[in-house]
Length: 186
Image (cartoon, rainbow, N blue to C red; front, side, top):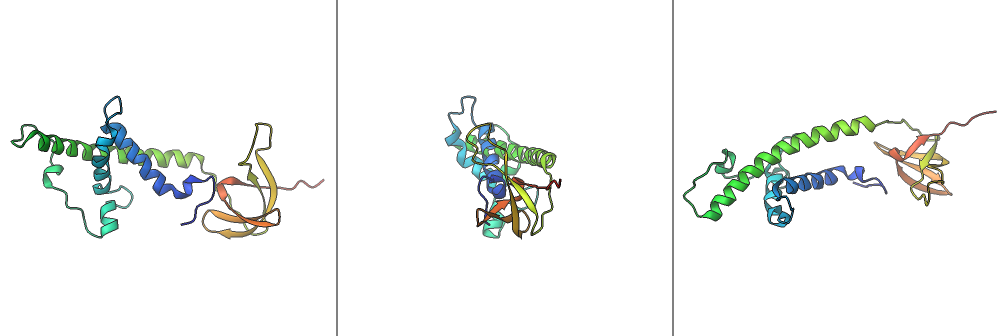
């Protein structure tokens, strides 16, 4: 997939997985967040073995084509008083709690993300030959214009990119960085 400059939302899947991993680490780490590196492997395990709400598959299953083998003891609620050594007890408890938290937070985060995204979406329909203004991404101070142009659309790449003619060059731009330009006739 090709992404456009200044538009991390075009690579949203990767950005979203990083956000989820940060949420896991924030919840698993102690208040001082000094032990995050100890929790990284637990967080990644939980992320890779938890079915995603959107497609109902785990990342592990999508990569390897089989469901991950998750010990059944991880699927039961955490319990205390195991007869194993302290390390095994601690590991099992952490894995169970991490799995439950991961599932809860992933669902909450996806709902919140979708709601926030839908608030700010203003789709515009553009066609070849339309005139548009482009967001000025290289403003050096607050007095420079927010929008530059107008530019003519020379190609539409579904679903979110277009090519415009800028300074006798064809430039590919994300539609979120454009707005329609209406000429005022005297």
